[in-house]
Image 1: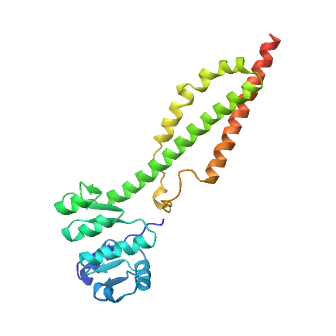
Image 2 (image 1 turned 60 degrees about the vertical axis):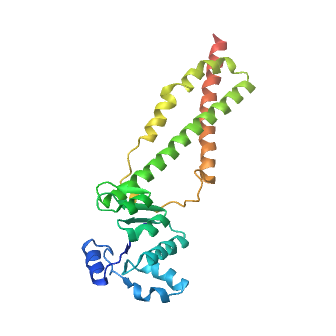
Image 3 (image 1 turned 90 degrees about the horizontal axis):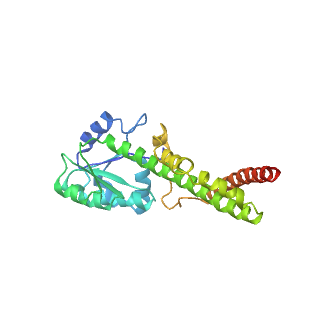
Length: 244
């Protein structure tokens, strides 16, 4: 789903490999391990290739951990790093999201981190990703609903005024602006639970605006459809009132 998990540790390669195998870090594929003894001799191109293929970086000191984090960022990736010791401080600070352990983490790690895990449960990170994506998606849906309905109100008011349907329009305004047709649906959209597969989706581009061009086109189309339906009802009501 566009999310990669790697291990950057100061432990020996054998220890790092044993832990990586136990947590199935590489999944069904073989675990690739890189020892820091060769790191300082790599060119920038070799480093870029390295971070795309390696799951475990062993015997890395604080400065080298920082370089790995920056190498991922130079590739345009959003980096979240977990750590618990003083030696993780520079990398935690440089990461887009620094995550410190609340129980086993040192005071220095907690001070520079953006988040602190209260129970040192790494699975909380996956839950946080799901909740964050859900909050973003629900907020976008709710805003789309509010913009569509209110833009439709503007279009409908303008069209009704142009065609002298103001008397009938006043009958519909309390319904259009009522809580049941505005606030309640918006709140319902905001409270939508996480989708089961939302964690498998690729991360969105952080430079992408909230509404892209296709979204704006859809907003206008939906507003036009709502306006057409409302105007049809107003015309029918106007005709009926004239007959009476």
